[in-house]
Each structure stands twice: as C-alpha cells, then as structure tokens.
Image 1: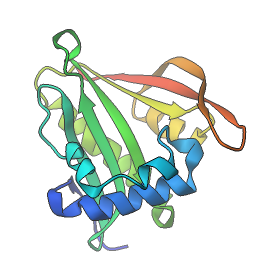
Image 2: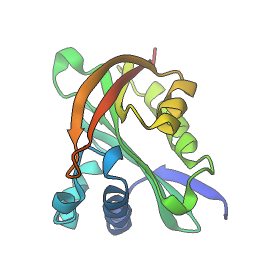
Image 3: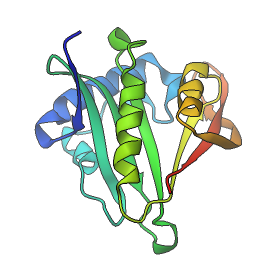
Image 4: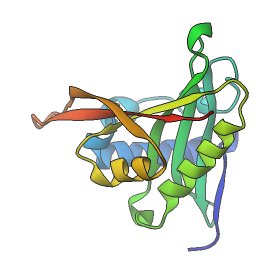
Amino acid sequence: MAELIIRSMQEPDLMGYKALRDAMLAGHPEAFTSDAETECQRDLASYRSRLAGGSQGGTLFTLLALDDGRIVGALTCEREARSKVQHIAHLVGMMVADTHRGRGIGRALLQAAVRQLRATHGLAQLTLSVTASNRAAVGLYESAGFVRYGRLADAIRLPDGRRLDKDLMALRLD
C-alpha cells in the first residue's frame, strides 16, 4: 500500500465516492441503514450535499482515504442545524473497501474526523449509530472513547428476514 492520504472530499471525487458507497451497500447490507437498490439509482449530483460547508447545519465534511489515488474509505460528519442542538455532530457512512480492511484505515479516518471536530467552534458532542453485531466497528469506536448510550432494537430489517439492532454511541468533544 502506498502512503495513505486522508483528505476532505471535493467535487471531482464524487464518482469514486459513489462507486465505493454502492459497492459497500451491496456487499454489506447489515452495516448500513440505506439500501443498495435505492441508493444505486441516486444521481451523482445528489452526493454534492456531502461536500464541506455546513457550519450552521448539514454536512460539515466528508473525509476520504486514498491509496495510490484510489478512494478506499470514507466518513461523513454532519451537524445539527437547529440552534438548541448545534453543539452536536454525527458521524455517518463509515466505510472501508473490502480490499483494504484490517489496515487501520477506519481508525485513521475516525482519528482525523475527531481531530477536525474538536477544532470546530461550538461542537461539544459527537454521535453515531453502529450495527450492534458488528463487533469490529463497535470495538473501534470504543477504543476512540465512544460510549454506548442506548440500543435501538429492530433498527434494520433486511430482505432475508434478519432484524438487526443499532448501538447508539457518543463522544464528548469538549
């Protein structure tokens, strides 16, 4: 693996981001709330909302992990728009390509996101949800200081009949 680069997603990255996301949704339906069939139909332009710019609500940034110029991981951070909860941000859509699992890319994305969020004025708390049975992901978040504050039972229903719970986790930023 060449030197891994973590950086914010830009407009020219949208096609690679969509390709990674579509592959991850299709290959790991248990890990995502969105479904592959619906999301594969989305227009490329619809992902522009995941670019940086939502300081007062919406997407703050999407970080990409690049290996030799190829997008192999991504993580989006969103901020609450309502004034009473603008101190809360949410991590969504953590993904690492199957070809690059186990190389610390998820950890690198998470650390970069938390570092950037700690430097963002007015943020005090970071939340996420993770499929409770995904022990590797839960372990990663716990190792970064996230604490489970709840579990949403029957959060995801898959076409094969499986019903999956989501752990709700939070990290204090201040």
